[in-house]
Image (cartoon, rainbow, N blue to C red):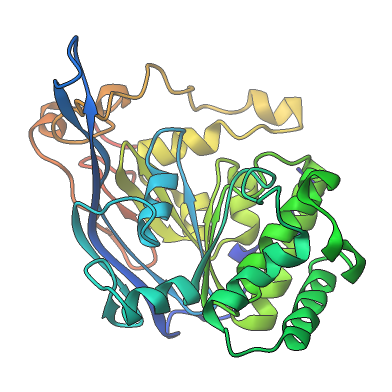
Length: 351
């Protein structure tokens, strides 16, 4: 991962704590009714996202990590109306959007854009690259003339590392990295305030991942852009994120400043994820003390009582099954952790 690890956002001295809060999410829940049992009319509730709360400030990157099935992508889609919200609120610049319609919903769709995980599948094969990138302008800025739209499309294609001649081609003529650049161009052409990146580099080679991550960081600095960056790779998240939020089975396990989470994670699940990051030096890898996670993620159709992580946690006690732990911070500067037995000040958790 050496090609990706530049001076990380963790080490960025820019103070964003006083920046404007653009996105505010409170107690968001996403549930699905799915068939469960021998008969199709036997349905159960799948708890995909449960009571998630967080803020995203202007110019900030919030990294969202967790195992497959933890609800990361569902949460990302719910923020822009692509997944149904059961309860909770989503506010964009102080205005509620979940219950909004008309102008409010149109503003959200203009100001919040998404980069999807599969770069090729997210591009319409019937449309040219120029038409794909221009589509947000034709939807949200219909007053622009054809010449101005073409000029903006050419400028944006060049900014993401393509060229104006590519506008006439179709998506199948490009590599995965080039298709992802097209997706970035489409997301940024309308000058949004927030871009949700749903695992934008997971399907790309390591060297291409570095190019895409560096491109996103450059564009963020140029435009004071906010990013919600969903990923499995904690090395990539560390490179680009100012804060990190860790999810498990639809709940937030830990959230805090990037450096605080990576250097002093308090939740056992976060520490297990960090211990699972590959280390290129075999000698350093042997010095690791953490044991890999055992067991499987419980079904979201029947989540465990209390702490969602207790069935795989080596420190679980009876209190973990009795009550759901809230997100709490022990000392200033430490991450918020939803755990009854968090690690404090670098010490191991108590039983």
